[in-house]
Length: 378
Image 1: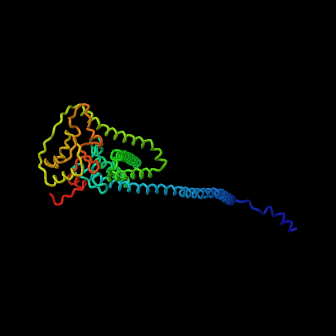
Image 2 (image 1 turned 180 degrees about the vertical axis):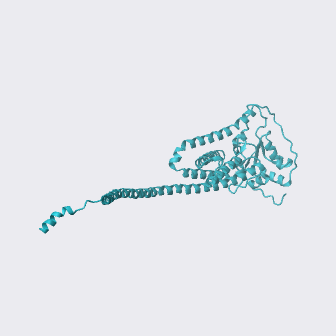
């Protein structure tokens, strides 16, 4: 009975929880729920962070691949830079050599001095003093000096990446290509003149200048590359055509001078020589006469008078002089047959041992060409 009473009394022995206990139980359940929610949130965020990390890993190889892909381009871009610098240095060196050569020839032209010809003897002067040695009255060496100087200056500025007037490197390269193209075209034209108008005559300065011009042209063209050169082919042809037309107009323009002179009526006259002859000049004149050397000239030619003045009054009379217009110069007058057979292009013209020499010649040069030995005569 006691056990039954006790068992029966158990339900009634539980006490009702107080408000504090209920509040504590709520907080415990809330904390447990919050913990689970945070765990779920962390679990859901883990893939996000992994994806983000994976994206970074995917991005990094792309960056590496991009950098690896860009590195050859950077190498290729640096390679043309190195090639361009070598091209600019070579052009600057060639332009400097050409500038020195043409400056020397300009000095000779301005001082009316004879050129030293290491090959061909005095044949250089035949070309340098001919009618083809000037373009529209401007001495050809002066034009060449300006062209070589321009090439040298542009090349040095391109190599230093410092171009004037705000010109960028691409425009500077185009100026260099245009200049070298015009120089190569002019050299080709003059080589044609040298071969057709001066057969058998060697001009070492002309050949050196042509070699420098062609070197500058091909080096510059190579730096542009095949595709770029093909795109510029049309402009290069136009530049070459302008050069050919300009030179042809200049030299054809010299013909109307003689044609306009044909309108004049010039009676024949002789110019009296006043300078006395030296023993050396007399001996040279006799030597020239003995070997059959002849001087062709015109009575109105001032250079012919100056050539005779070099010999002096007495020696000039000993020269075998051929007057090409003995009857004066009138409209329709033709040059003497003896002069036309020689192929005279200007006055005076010497024919010594079968060699045709145009222009005035110093006595020392005539002595060397004719093989005259003074033997102590002064």
